[in-house]
Length: 383
Ligand code: ADP
Ligand code: MG
Image (tube, rainbow, N blue to C red; front, side, top):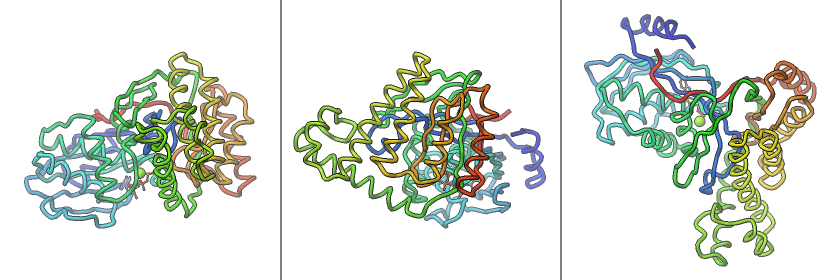
């Protein structure tokens, strides 16, 4: 991503020189389907960014050009009521919520440029929300606490756009740091940045290029199965507020009282939360072998207990597991398609990508897309 190119494009559209703000996409290394169970997650911000270039306007209009959509959208700040089912909803929602939080905006000219694939599960939406937030805040010389900013983005997704995402996406897009993974407690939002140096290890993201239809309804089903699990645990262990509060011993003690589906879902969540904690410890000790081992366990648990994998994801992980220099591989995101995340020794990355491309295509007939990344810096002004 290049400052001059974006500034030039902005000049073509708006005849002035902008300030530019950028925010990264993200990938979750481990801690899957535990966010809505008050668990722990361990994402990194990735090297793919969305940039929003901005100059203030005198009126109350947002003029937004998206390079990805090749479309100009004009929004009146006084007429944002509900979503329009349009890509600009994310920015309209952010603008509305900023004003509801007491930040009086003026109009702005905005240009969006992005290197994050849209809808691939790398959170192009959170990157857009966070980069646009910084642009809008700076258009009136205002600032907002970074945790509030992340929560604001999540509120836009949940309440304005109507998508189910946890605050993890925005949180790491804002707080990510170069060569560090972010260990986040989804209950308290306490977090710790843990070194994950990029010299020896790369984070390789492989997009299966499939997205199975049942994803959303199955996601909602999983959430209610977890809720059902909490109710059962509560009867024996009164302090249970979420599956986060249940120990593995407690699970073993009463698992016979549960229907098979509920038991499997709870087993995944409780073990996955523990694995994520253990991965954070392993990372602190620079023990990536152990880290990788838990990634494979996570995948198996998502496949067998949580049942959110699919053939393409399993094929991708199985190919990865056979390659030299691969420490761990698993599906990442909600499942039923999307991406896998792989920890690969830098010296083996080239061969790894070749092997994934060739074998995945051979076994599925689909061409995968592969991104080589490392833990990157969070949202900031671009100079
Ligand atoms: P993702 O996994 O990439 O976050 P989502 O469906 O949550 O997928 O968000 C993608 C949506 O975000 C797009 O359909 C579009 O509405 C909006 N979006 C993301 N990036 C851009 C962009 N560069 N320009 C315009 N809209 C964008
Ligand atoms: Mg999204």
